Every structure is written in C-alpha cells, then in structure tokens.
Length: 218
Image (cartoon, rainbow, N blue to C red; front, side, top):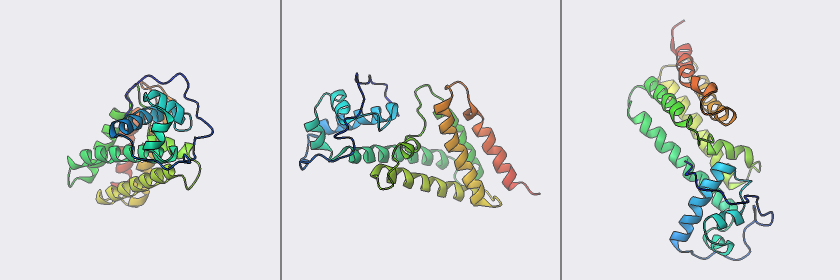
C-alpha cells in the first residue's frame, strides 16, 4: 500500500535503462541500501505506474545512485517482478485473514471478502490493484513482472471457483468467474471515479445478488 512519500521532480524513465540489465555483474549491496531502493520503488510504481518511473528517479528518491541500484538489482525488470511478488503476497495475506474468520461457511467467506474489499479500496490514496495495473502496462508476454501478475490472477480465479463450489452454486465455475470479474471491475472503477463515488460501492451487494442467483432453487 502506498506511503505517500514525495515523488521526485521528474519520474520519466531513462530509455537506456528502462528494461535492460546493467552490463556489469551485480554485487551484493548493503541490505539497508537495497531495502531503501526497493521500498522507494514500490511506492513510486504504485503511485505513478511502472513505465513512468525510471531507474534514475528511483535512485534519486532513495537517496542513492544508479551504481547502488545495479548492485542491488540486475535490472529494472527484476525489481518490478519483486515489487509485484510483494503485492501478491500482501493480497493473499489479506484474503486468508478474511476467509479464516468464517471457516466452513463459503458463502459468508465470499460476502466477507467483498465487504472488506469495498472498505479497503475506497480510500483516497488507492490506485486500484497493482497486479491488474501491471498486466496492462507490461504487454510483453515474457516480462517477469507480467508472469507474476498472470500467476496471481489465475490463482484468484481458482479460489473464487472453489468458494463458489463450496457454497453449493450451480455452474460453480461460472459464478466464480463472475465474482472475479466483479472484484477486478471494482478495482478499475476505483481508478476511474473518485473515492467517494462510483460503482465500487455496490460491489458487496452485487456479490450477494450473484450468489443468490446461483444457489437459490428454481
């Protein structure tokens, strides 16, 4: 989640280093320097976008230089993949914490996920889902960051389908996919509308309507 640190004066990427590895072999940087670079990059990537933030901007905002950057990370691509992996892990920690409170009640687990989703996504600094944003920005199929995003979304689909089946839904895969579309669409509309308005506010109610439609006897 974003920490609201001040962005550097310019966040335009350095074309020469945007996606290419530094020619020298990286060596081990001091952990605190690496951590500072990483946390700074995470903040800038989330607030401004991956393509918009270059190596120079990250190094400057972290109070270091490009040499220290490449001692810590072989390339910007590697850093992006690590950033997205961190975001994915945070998401699953959040998910697991929600569903574990309603063990054995799949319907309540789904409802709780969407209740928390609306609350957690409707804050002023939210820029939506970092993984979904990255899948739009990173068009190259083999980009390591895109691979992280695709893996996370495939797992999200699997989990929603599993919950739909456990909730006794007819056509459980269909309901699971509909719930995933609802959550993904909620993230997108959060980017489009202000935090005080927009369709996202109806997501929890819509999830309940969908569950009823697939579980209520004809």
